Length: 196
Image (tube, rainbow, N blue to C red):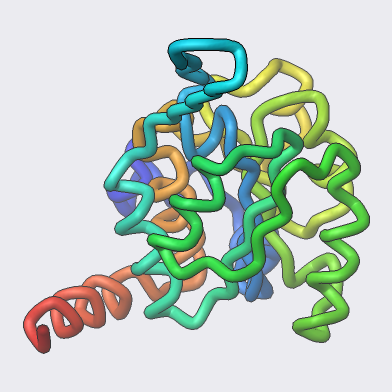
């Protein structure tokens, strides 16, 4: 399905889903399998030197900028502790980062309290079993194309793109389209680039 086609969009998403998405103010994403393809590159010359690399998509970085221009709060909750995640989050100026948190409900509740939000104001983008409890709680659960089948069953939207290949950006675009703010976001993005 092409979310950018008005006909496809109207045929796929009913008014109830669109009204649900219009309430979203906070977008939370898993990292491994959502912002990355789930691969972890390990290396080093000896046991004490532990080098870990992850591949992130610039499309998703642009998605973060796009979301920020539309005044969405962005947070990352990753079950796996990784310095690569911290580095990428710092580059994208994402301050709400929970790195190495297997129980994602605790940081989720902290985020709701911090921003005075309820479940219906939150979207979560996930891919694996560790994400299911949060998918069942938020108002707008989103799965990436490469998500585990049980995660996809919990989602009201599944991206056509896989994690690490622009799935986060697609999810942001979908949220903006549902909220009727996609064109506004495009204009804000162009204006922000031209003002540099």
